[in-house]
Each structure stands twice: as C-alpha cells, then as structure tokens.
Length: 148
Image 1: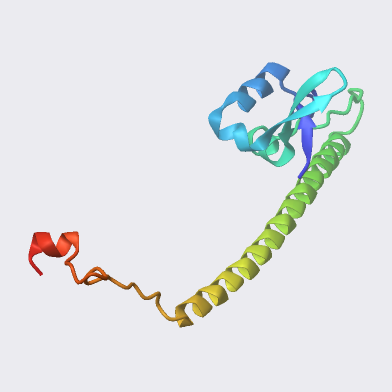
Image 2: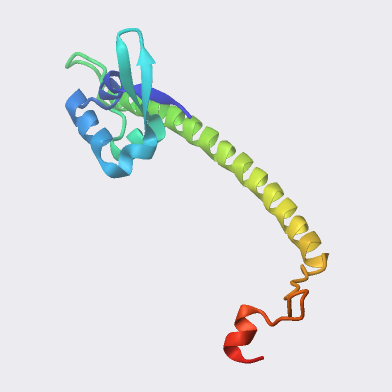
C-alpha cells in the first residue's frame, strides 16, 4: 500500500495541508494514517487509496491560448484525467491483490485450525476423579455437609 506525506497529499488533491491534517485527525482515519520518522523529525503519512476516496485527485489543467480549439482542450483534459484515474486504479488493483493474498492465507490457517479441532475431538475426554473419602475412611468436607 502506498503512503504519501501530507504535503504530497495536499499537492495531489489541490487542497490545503490543514484540510488533510483535519482528515487525518478524524477517528475513522486512524487505520489509514501512519507516523513515519524523517530527517527533520516525524511525519504523518496517509494511504493514497483512502485519501483519493475522500478527496479525488485534482485535474491537470493545461494553459492554452484562447485561439486553441475547444475539442483539443477537452481531449487533453480528458487524457490528463485518464492518467490520474489509471494510476488510482493501479493502486486499487494492488490493494485487491494484497487482500486476495490475505484471504488465501486466512483460509489455509482456518483449514489448519479445523483439522486441529477434529483431532482434539477424537481425544478421550479428561477423566475427573472425585475423591469419595479420604484414605482413613473419613468423609470429605462436602460429604459431611450434604450428608452423603
């Protein structure tokens, strides 16, 4: 999973860095935010998938003169948007693959635990021996109280 700094996140979304900080401080954001040690101290990093789910990446704006053809500008802005979404989809595909691997691992672990459970059920139950009386033939404390 890709993590980026708050400054990079602000640049990628076109928002102020304080807006990204407020997002990171929300309780539901805690699993997606990490503290990374940097050269100048610790830096917060945020998962790109989570960030782009909350705030879509900014569109790439190309400066064109007024004489340019509208269709050409539309095609170029669509191409820039396509590139951004292609990168987002690549990150999401990577996340899907990681989750599939984790599911496969958990299934194998579950299978092993089920087999272990079957083996434990085949073992005889532990025998609990209750002492009816002491070696001297005397009744136990509970036998004296309940009269058995």
